[in-house]
Length: 273
Ligand SMILES: Nc1ncnc2c1ncn2[C@@H]1O[C@H](COP(=O)(O)OP(=O)(O)OP(=O)(O)O)[C@@H](O)[C@H]1O
Ligand SMILES: [Mg+2]
Image 1 (cartoon, rainbow, N blue to C red):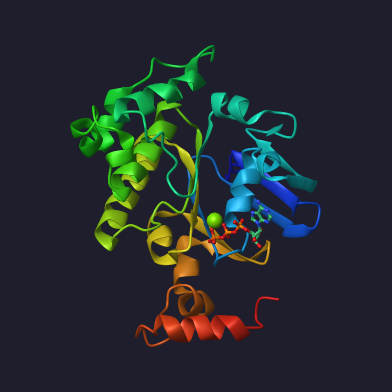
Image 2: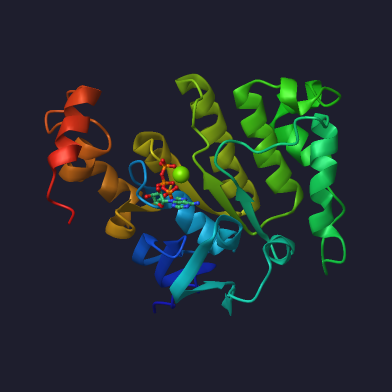
């Protein structure tokens, strides 16, 4: 006997987003995040990845963006009328691009600032700072220091830690690898995979670095020009010849192509339109 798969924790249906009344950033984008899974959202600069996350967490109006059509459901409920901070209280945490932390506050104060998400929340446990320090021992060592003095990698850890304090069911992660060394990227993605495995936290992981994202994701989507062009399991995407060539920088034989070749190829590609 087969049982129906559980309802996705996040469903995005055919959304269109327009900035400043003229710039169409998303053109009928749909995706789903199954409960308990990591889903990668991949694509090159300007594809609309961050816009997708901002649409989900209702942050578009801050940038004169508008969800012009389509719908988004979190835990089966439409999000259109729910304010961003209410979405956080309901278990949706967004780790923004560029690791936003309060630079003039200490590491510990940054974590305390996130506890607002737990006040008045039915069933919320007390804030668990040790949980964050357990995943990121470096933050424990630096807890009394100003966040502005942390390294880029430490700030990314703190941004993820701030999201964790809010006890999310779904985390939106916008390019956690941005500007980090390969070693640190690997470390942070290892922690992301552990948080998912140990806590069952669902994740929508935006990345330009397809290799590292597909290594931890269960499934993924690739977007171009505001819509999805390919989707599938992480294994299938990682072995797809087009994906390998355009996003993993590997030609059929497995030899690495130079970044310049790939950029050149991308500029004239027609296969996705
Ligand atoms: N606040 C804004 N106002 C006007 N246009 C915007 C705004 N934010 C994004 N855009 C445009 O929307 C499109 C998608 O941008 P978005 O930031 O979502 O892409 P991205 O995939 O996250 O790119 P990157 O990998 O560079 O972060 C781009 O054409 C961008 O110029
Ligand atoms: Mg972006």
